[in-house]
Length: 135
Image (cartoon, rainbow, N blue to C red; front, side):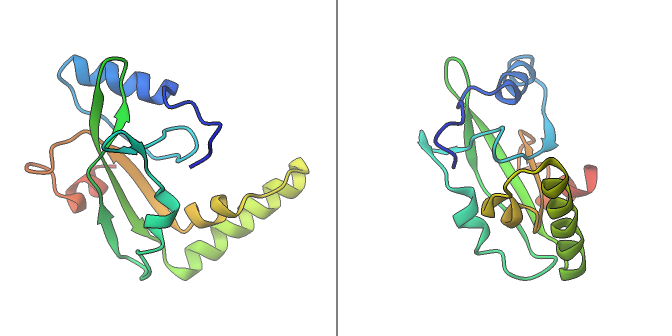
């Protein structure tokens, strides 16, 4: 996790608002803009993604984001892209970095190997497969 990331991101604020109103959220996960925590400690998403090695492999984790008053339980849901989709995503990222003359971070290339969502939908009612299909 990037040490400069604010644990109280605007995405966390939005998800907290929905949670307080009794609703559920389902959004694309951007690891840089929505820090994840495990029992109050920063969660290393990149390290855990390395366990998802096969294309089409799905993984869901029970984590939390930092709310104003208490942690909000969330479930990141990831599916590894196929090699063709990964090459396409990497090519696009490299082209964009070249156009903007910016350095491409290694973790950005790693995250591009996955389609990632984060949700507050209860796992007991919404399997990871159904959650991914909803999006």
